[in-house]
Length: 189
Image (cartoon, rainbow, N blue to C red):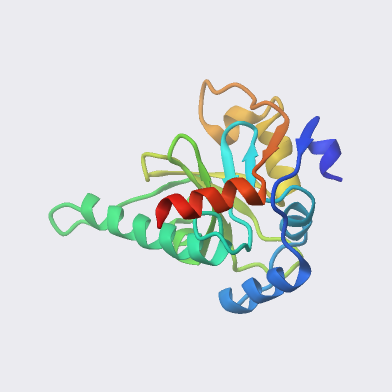
């Protein structure tokens, strides 16, 4: 399935069912089917030269549960700093539903400072994917699944997700091996 999304696919450290199940239990909701497939086929790495999707892993810098918490805290702190004179921060949300940020579970980081998140209010096998732009204001619809998201950002509709004037991303995935991830952990110690 992912070989059709990424024309160049070099998998990184992948997650097993048990790790995905533990992450779902810790987060309190079922992980989307396309995300689970991504974690098992692609793993940790850089997608489209732009996105790092967090995967259940023993490496904090790439772990889904750890990153979901860190990103949510960081976005919350930044939004608090952006609030001025008692006025709440306003998000410019495609579709107009600003409460979407309250249902967000962050699961990815863009090289330009944006964040990927699921709207976890869904009840099906997938949750809508949204992109919070680096300005922490614009929130654009990314897709109905991870497959849809990467199809959109690597295709002609890339600017609808990534912002006006953006070119489609390369359809490639460059994985990070366990050895590289372990070196990063050792460097942090």
